[in-house]
Image 1 (cartoon, rainbow, N blue to C red):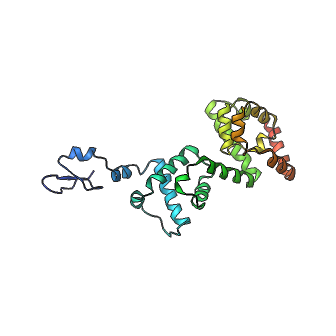
Image 2 (image 1 turned 180 degrees about the vertical axis):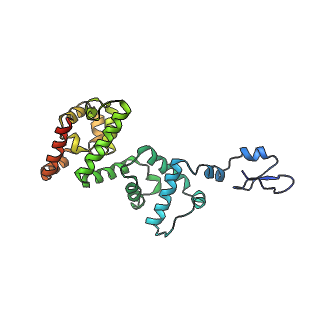
Image 3 (image 1 turned 90 degrees about the horizontal axis):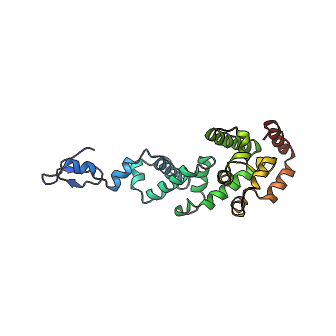
Length: 233
């Protein structure tokens, strides 16, 4: 902290809020909102909030250049963007840049950005439009991540994953219906879910949509079943 002498009565001055203090130790322990925000700059949630702040002004307001971090700190929406940054950090959305673009151009009010139903709508829209290769790659990466954490083979995911973890992965779109609904172990895993858990993932695994999709995309279905057979999932 740089101390600046303001006057003889309160010689130590906060460079952020300009409050004066008698002792330098008091100045150093002082934590006003501008100082706190300056010190939080490198926190992940704040960096994500700041990035989203600039994307909002670029994509929704037509800004040609980024706003400074100092401008971000002074914004009336600082807390809302940082809260959204925390949401991003915790949820780890599919294709985070795409989701940020989706949310800042959606017209949804910022105080609703952390609503899980909005993210679910994004996930459903994405998994219904993406190619089968992308869906399989993401699913296998998720299964490998689980296997590394739990010291298992990734091909044992459907047999050994906890129900709560599976629900979370499915609801977040990280395990694709292409894989779950076309292998016996995936279907067996679903049989362990209770009614509440099945309700949570129903929109993702919508049987009517996926049954029709599999019939229409026969070549993709053959590819999926071939991978399932070779991996012995």
